[in-house]
Amino acid sequence: MKKKIIGALLSVAMVTSALVGCGSAAAPAAEAPAAEAPAETAEEAPAAEAEAPAEAPAAGGKVGVSMPTKDLQRWNQDGDNMKKQLEEAGYEVDLQYASNDIPTQVSQIENMISAGDKVLVIAPIEGDSLGTVLQQAKEAGVAVIAYDRLIMASDAVNYYATFDNKLVGTKQGQYIEEKLDLKNQKGPFNLEIFTGDPGDNNARFFYGGAMEVLQPYIDSGVLVVKSGQVEFDKVATPGWATEAAQSRMDAIISANYADGTKLDAVLCSNDSTALGAINSLQANYAGSHDNWPIVTGQDCDKPNVKLMLDNGKQSMSIFKDTRDLAAQTVKMVDAIMKGGEAPVNDTESYDNGVIKVPSYLCEPVFADADNYKTLLIDSGYYTEDDLK
Ligand code: BGC
Image (cartoon, rainbow, N blue to C red):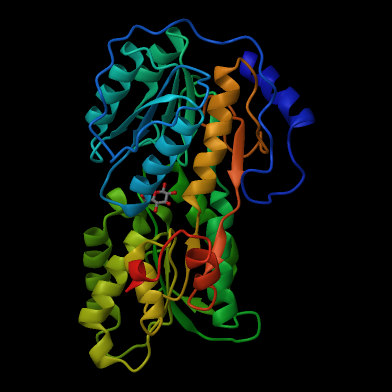
């Protein structure tokens, strides 16, 4: 109830009119300190190579950061950026990675609560597996920020910091639309589709954004999905696993494209699935076909940027600057710690089944071989050596 009121107030007072990336909204002014003093029973986080905490004047308090896995490059960057920026803002940070294992994530969060963390920043492995532990957080007066992925089926989520996930999918769909000139051509062009983990709310937004662009062309026959696998459940990739995407692509190629039929585009929701599709194309398609399909992606992971630079084996990726998302999340933490309200710019889009979670959406950016230098190198995200 309280959240609904806060949400309504926020929608009037704080929603910014346009999405212009992160970092444009200032944290509200400090008010009275929020939470009670934590019990000092913390275990040290075993994760991330931490630099020495900056000696900035501490707003005080400990922040738990729960990341899903170290397996994907992006979550390591997210964790590192957050730790660094929170420490610079004067907070103590308990950073944990859960090896994509839900019970591990739950017990790490339990430990954070009992260690007296005042704010938890959580990127859930599976959106609706944290209800019970978050109830404990709520009862202990611990604020929760869902990070990048929405936490579902719980009213104990105070805020959500993410990128505009639907826009990620829209940009991927529009890329295929433009490259195949679907507005003017009749085709038919062959398309296959790979999205992410069914338990990750983001996957539905990525898929939804892309399909809003592409579905009309499938309906009119300009695009043909020869495998017949179009619905979300058929094209989902458990755990976002490269191997799962690769073996599904192996089966699709052998059943539909082994006779020389041309595949024109592969919609992949992110870079780990794109990598699986590309591995399979290299093994099963490259030698027997004289074209290479358009392949989309997301995250600008190093191996995928290399594939973009290597004869365009991956055509594009969506760049989500994890430094900006971390900075925005730090503003949220800071506002909560100081007893104020966090800056948000969307109070409508992210309904977790129980509440609409006040959100801050950063803007995802399109990246390809033409603009990678400005976007990734000049901005200091990667060095040229990282991409060799
Ligand atoms: C993130 C993507 C990421 C995927 C797999 C999604 O929730 O938004 O950036 O590629 O998870 O880790």
